[in-house]
Image (cartoon, rainbow, N blue to C red):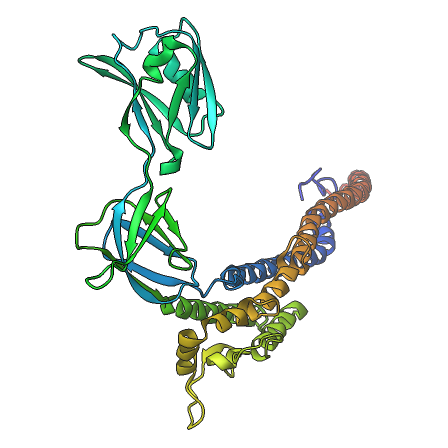
Length: 460
C-alpha cells in the first residue's frame, strides 16, 4: 500500500512497520482467498472449455455418420475423358460401354453483313423463341449493332441467348448463340418490321440445335441401346447413375465404366468413429482424473462417459436386419472403456475385423441404419452431445455462469483494495495522533530534563 504520511518521525517509534503489519494481517488472508477462488474458477472454466471442445470434435465425426447415405459411396471409373459419371450411392455394381455419338447443341445464327458495328439497321421488335420460351427486344431507329447486341444480352426475360459482334474483313455481323440445347429447342428470330430482316428472318444457321446421343453396350453381336437427351446429361439411363458427355468417343473405342461399392469409405468411417470415440474418452478421463483433472469428480464428465458406454454396447431398437449392434460388426469396449475391433475368435464367432468386412461387403445399408436411423448410435450420441454444447446446453450455460463469476472476482479485488485503503487511512489517523502525543511528551520530557539540569548546583 502507498504511504500517505511518514509515521514515527516525532515519536521515534517504528509506526510505519506497525501499520504495515496491521494491513498485511488484514489483506493477506483475503488476497489468498480471492486468488484461490480465481485459480479454482479459472481451472474449472478451462476444463469446461476443453470438455465442450472434445464433444464438438466428436460431433463433427457424427455429423457424417448421421447421414442416411454416409456408407452408400461408390467408386466409378471411366476409361475415357469423353464422359463424367457419378452415382447417388445406390447403383448396382456393374460394367458398361458407352459410345458418345452426338453432343447436344443449341442453335447458332449468323446475321447479314453490315459496314461496321456502328451501323444503324432499322426499328421495330425482334422476337426470340425456342419452342417453349420467348422474349422480345425493342429496337429504336437510332440503335446500331452494338446497341442491339447490348439490349438482347440485358433483356431480363432472355432464356439463354447471347449476342456477339464479329468484325471481319468483309464487314460486321451479329451472332446469336442459344444455350438451350436439344432438337426441340431450335432458336428462331422473327420481326414484323422488314428493316430488321437482316438480323432476323434472313439469318443463316451456323449450328443447328440437336440432341445428345449415346449407345450403351454395343458389341459385335448387339447394336446396343441408343438413348438421346436434349442436354448432355443422361440421368438414370443406368439406374441411379448420371452420365455427362463432353466429347465424342473414338470409333470402336467406347468409354468403359465400372461401378463398384466403395468399401474403403465404409472402413474409414468406422475407423474415424472408433478414433473419435476413444479420443473423447481419453479427454474425459484426463479431465475427471482424481488428482490432476481440471474437472475431478465432475458429475457432467461421469454422466457423459456413462451415456457413451451405454449407447455403444446396447442394441439399436427398430432395426429389422441382421445387424442391430456394434458387436454385430465386430466392435466392443475394452477394459479401458475404449472401442476396438474384437480380437476374440472361436469356431462359431469371427474376429471383429472379419465381421466388419463381411458387413461392409454384404450389408452396407444395414450398417448405415445402425448409425443413422432415428435410434441409431450416431443419432443418439449426437442428440446427447447437443444437450451439452448447444446454445442452451448444460455446458454452455455452465461456461457462461463461470465466466460471469470470474469477471465478478475483478470487482471483489477492487472492493478489497478500497476497503484496505480505508483501513490504512484509519490506522494512519490513529497512529498519527499517537505519534503527535508521544512527540509532545518527549518534548516536555526533554524540557524538564534540561531545566532540572540547569537548577542543579555546580560541584566545582
